[in-house]
Image 1 (tube, rainbow, N blue to C red):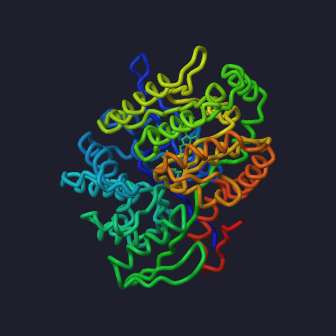
Image 2 (cartoon, rainbow, N blue to C red):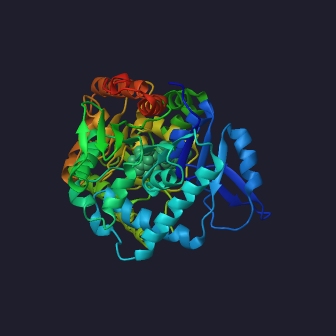
Image 3 (cartoon, rainbow, N blue to C red):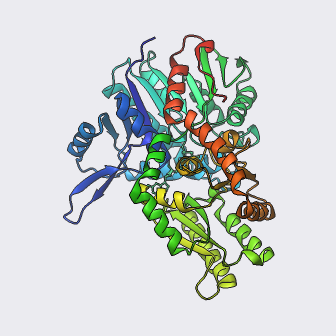
Length: 484
Ligand code: GDG
């Protein structure tokens, strides 16, 4: 079957709008997991991207989007939100309810603002109307993530011939958590309006199936392997586990550039050739940063021989700073960093080097290259691209990845690769860290080679092709296998 035109539909467009010193609006490519994943795909095959412009303003900035579209090689279709919509839909329903619930943290959910659900519905409707007005009916809409779970159903109410697929970038919770959601049935029914619903892992897909069986018990699920088929009322929906990945070649290439290697050497010099342990995370309570710091403290207490031999660099990328909970988390992290440094510092050495900032991609790669150990310990994470990026950059196959068993990436990287840890087990993480510091080079190479091969084979293009092949294949048997 020939592929129709493709539209990516996501909460944010892959651009960041800001005002320069002269008060003029400027547009730049945005950061974050989804942009990292999708921008190269659309650039290569052409298409369009529908999303919020990131700005609650009435000002007309359409010419900037047109210019960007021409340069980017795909069309941008901005959706405009009012400040109330932005608050209720984005900060409210998406990030105070869906985000914690889907990350297995239901006690953090704010279910007490009825307006949130109304705004969530209104904004999803706005997206559906934008798609109906701007894109031809033959366009296949690839909807991304938890912000937009109602769009397909609303779009198909406007035009029942529309075809949509959905990918969830965060975990899908087990029934015990999902059933707490007051709007659980509407959301599940809306997801079944897609032709394909895909998750990062089999665990997420099985959670989804268990919720279907509990809330829509007439659903019949058939098939085996990564993709199965669910029959609900008159619809047949494919349900898949299709793990997202990175642009492996691009990261390996950047890591091989002389200026990046030089920057990595300078970092090693600056840290006096100690064993470098690296953490890179968006500021978020799901990333398990306080627990990680506590495990470092424990390791330094229990292994005094490692003091002055290691440096732990924690890069914290600013995120959702306007939310009180996130500001509080930042203070908690900074207090812990101060305490641990105060506890162990000696003249000329302190264990933690903390940086709160955005890093240009090249600089990030030089940190990946300099780090002997990558410490990735989210309490729950859809995938975690940082773990994969680190491996892609380790061209000489040295380095140890310590990875939370609750990151989606663990499903692919656990076999003879990453050192898996339970991020709630501070002692277990301290043990893993100490073992990683001592790991012989031969073992590092064996594990790293294995992980790099998995990521090389299953890169971002493989993910995209698998999703689209699954969306357009006539039979389940035509879908490529994901297992290595
Ligand atoms: C969501 C899910 C899922 C980070 N700091 C800087 C920077 N980054 C880039 C990394 C990486 C991306 O941002 C972060 O991706 P993650 O996967 O770690 O996490 P989320 O942003 O939470 O993404 C997640 C993902 O969607 C994709 O499906 O894996 O589970 O939560 O690419 O490199 N990039 C630059 N400077 C930084 O300071 N340039």
